[in-house]
Image 1 (cartoon, helix red, strand yellow):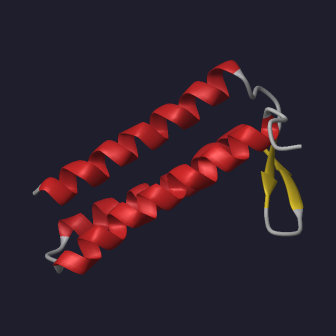
Image 2 (cartoon, rainbow, N blue to C red; image 1 turned 120 degrees about the vertical axis):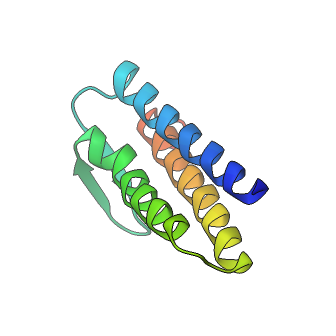
Length: 97
């Protein structure tokens, strides 16, 4: 039960970060950085696209009965999503140039 609370808290935090930065900082376009390429996308796709996909995945997996390692895998996936969001936000605010 504690693992579900952790993943739910990480999901809510990820949505809050994405919505905050879309509302106050990124109005028109956002830059998504891959390993060696750059993509210009809308702010929703850039900051909340991966969050949306992982949210549906999390809800689907928690609807089924799964093993403990899958639950912890979901938590680590949310941590990775937050790290990717932080990287995109820092790069778009010109903190990583």
